[in-house]
Amino acid sequence: MADALLDIPCVTLAGEHKVLGDFPGKALLVVNTASQCGFTPQYKGLERLWQAYREQGLVVLGFPCNQFGKQEPGDASEIAQFCELNFGVSFPLFAKVDVNGGAAHPLFVELKRRAPGVLGTQKIKWNFTKFLLDPATGRVRRFAPTTKPDQLKASIEALLSR
Image 1 (cartoon, rainbow, N blue to C red):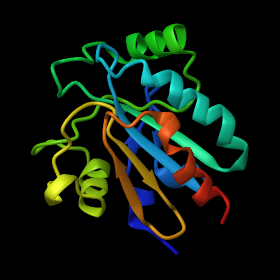
Image 2 (cartoon, one colour):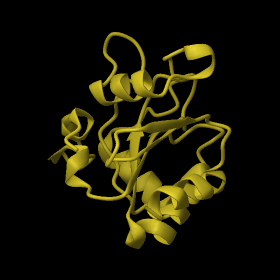
Image 3 (cartoon, rainbow, N blue to C red):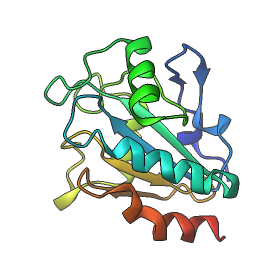
């Protein structure tokens, strides 16, 4: 099934132009991240998920965002260095994006449309909001920043087992 979500243009921290379809998998976990947030230690859990499930078809994709408390002030090289040195991040990271407002990246506009938050709100409330996408069906599940990566295992395993 062709899904326009998989064709939305994105740019990696290294400046490469990609679309989600360039990351074939059975499950895509898209997360808006930040380096100076109380949830920043979740990078470790995201990396654990990536290491544990990537051979089975999970792709973790990080999108730094500076919209919440200016908690991602660095440029692309600073973000990459921070994530690698402090958390051993090896999953794909993308250029900084806005996730809310008029300048919101089209990927997050569509993710929020498909998986609204509490009471149907589409606004992302903070860093480390997680979206689990099934590329085969286009279904998206949304998880709060307070949901730890390890708490996603059952949902990820359900997608990977199909």
